[in-house]
Amino acid sequence: MSAANAQTLIGMGAYLLVMIVIGFWYARRSNSNPEEYFLGKRGLGPWVAAMSAEASDMSGWLLMGLPGVAYFTGLGEAFWTALGLFIGTWINWAVVAKRLRTYSEIADNAITLPEFFSKRFHDKRRILTAIAALIIIVFFSIYASSQFVAFGKLFGYVFGAENYFTAMVILGAVLVTLYTLLGGFLAESMTDLIQGFLMIGALLLVMVFGFVHAGGFGGITENLKDFPRFLDIFGIATPDTVGGVQKITNGLPLFGPGANYGFLTIVSTMAWGLGYFGMPQVLLRFMAINRTSNIRKSRNIAVVWCFLSMFAAIVIGLIGRAYLPALLTSAGTAETIFIHLGTRFFPPLIAGIVVSGILAASMSSSDSYMLIASSAVSSDIMKGIIKKDADEALVMWVARIAMLAVTVFGVFLALSDNESIFRIVSYAWAGFGAAFGPLMLFSLFWKRTTLPAAVAGMLSGGVVVILWKNAISKLGGLFAIYELLPAFVISALVIFVVSLLTKKPSAEIEAEFEKAKTAEF
Image (cartoon, rainbow, N blue to C red; front, side, top):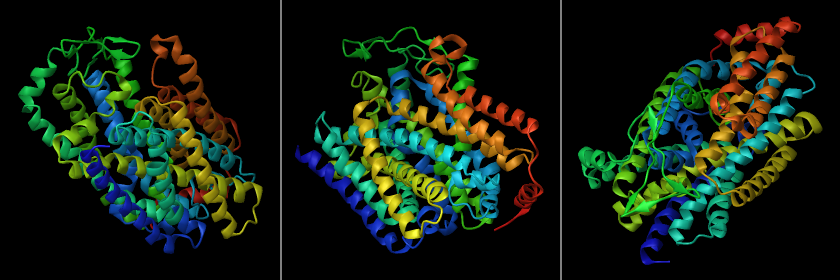
């Protein structure tokens, strides 16, 4: 390892040390009971709620996946994806946050998403809890693997090694597990606050320095103008590849004529925004806000952060292609463009702190995934279904064991299928968005929603995502759309129809629904 890489590693190590210290600090406060450990006793202030929601939501996808798409295929897909996510962020905070905060407390103080669904519908047999918990375990394991891939790409670059197993396990998965294991929800929320600032600071710094180094607006557009449809939001560039690797001639990448980004494709891409209504790591922050009066402030913070960070991420991808046009020749390697620019523009020690933005993004998400998955096993399945008389100490121990198991499984998935972070995240995002999103909206805003409809809607959403992704989309044409869109629509239709065909909810459930509409906490 070179001296420069060693300095970069020192900068990253300093950041990691701060995160571990925070975990130890909050370990004193977060281990008293499950509500403290999994939801921080609903004590998040507006800044922590907003920043931790956005940081845990965006993940390594923001600093690697999104710039990578912009670098490899141009503005089109990245722009419409970001626009859908921005709109979804605003609507989720404006419409869902307050109602979920009040309803989750009215529904017998539910502290996890599966528990909320079961208590909302008075599901005595905990059918919803079991299904939701299993969905969380499956898709969060996939999600966690995407973050470990991000760790691996970052550490692989720093160490100059293709084999990143040791670096990924020791400096990535193990460290995240350590501070989350110790400090629980409060630790990961407070570290997410710091990580959110680091992420947006790193993005803006690399964007500004990149803009200058690439020759400003004129230089960037001049260097990209010969790549067909690269800057066209209604088109997409088509790299000329052999075996997934772009051809290079005379130091320049080769592109095909490009393709149209039609109306259906735009709608399909913007459907990413629908995923927010079912994203556990975001919805839990709504449930954990200390007062409903703080939600408006949190929303404003979250929306501004979301806009600035995604704008910078896309611009970094475009700058990277203009500045280093032939450096990265596949969709997977394109996702390291932020690292390449960050290490070129800054001295090694500072570069280590800047590229720690990737660590921040990946850690802020993976800690949420592991904590929520462990709560699904310990609180929802073990205490909610298997051993209802389990004491708090047993629940906490099962949670920690489950967290370790999810970490190991996520590492296994990362190593067995090292594909694009963008694609891994898109699949898991669709799974949560379709399984939980429609049900969340119906649960909060339609009193007539019934328990059988909730079960049918959750199952249909998750199943359609899997079938569409692995079979139906391969038919091409109209079927080659993002699986979240058809799965979300089908789940919503199933909930509506089944609710009308089954017995209306009890008077007690309806009374709770009405109370949640006007309650303030």
